Image (cartoon, rainbow, N blue to C red; front, side, top):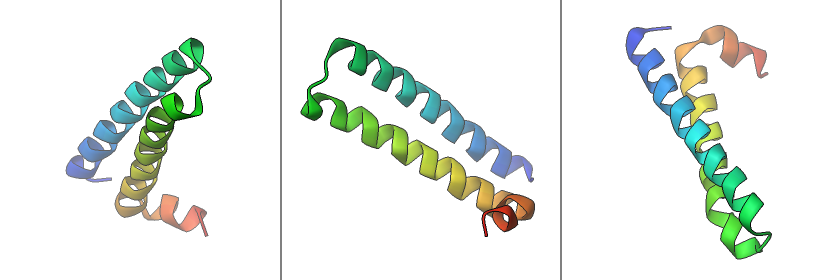
Length: 66
């Protein structure tokens, strides 16, 4: 994995962790579907971004998905 890719993966992991914390906090405060939609989508976005960055940076990861 290249240094630049590692940096992008790190950013995505950090974004995912922050989004997960917001989602957890929101779920503790309410079960209103509209209130949890944004943190759910944000968490899913960061998870997809991690997957995308790992696929670009690591052929073994990309091959393991097939």
